[in-house]
Length: 218
Image (cartoon, rainbow, N blue to C red):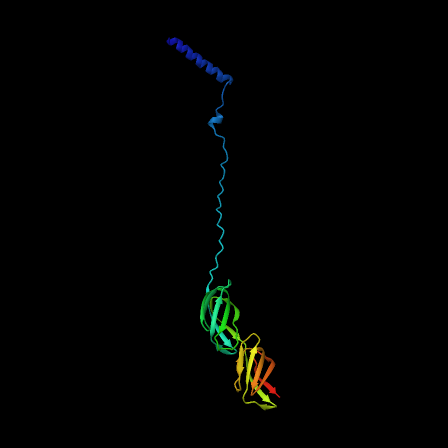
């Protein structure tokens, strides 16, 4: 039993030796023993995209504006309203007051107090408020007028004239040396003295002028 095993082992060894001599059936181990060198890929650094700058929201400042009303060259009392671009009232108060508002475009609506100027209508003006302090003056142009009534070339001491501007209220004039401040424009009037009543047409009062208007009656 032991011998049989020995022979079998020798045969096995002999067969193995012959195979190695003629190279038949040999297997190359070079590929398994030596790795083929492969280039190592170079990893390029990934550039991080910078976030796009966001548009900055304009930080609107505030401005302070003072509204002054004038009749001719004289400062006058009245009321002021400030409206934004949508037409909404954002501030109001008396003439001469200062208003603090965000920077932007506005519309001013100014109204004189009763008695400041007979027949005066509200005035509007555009306004742009900027940071800082500013002043806006709204002026009503006027005429300074008085009448001189004569009959056959002689002054009439007692008379009364009721005049009305187109679209305005009636104004009453009586003998005086003082000039009266009125709105410029075209007027029609009626003169009354004694028992006479005379229509006076074609009266035109020039803005900024000082006029003595003669009225001659036959």
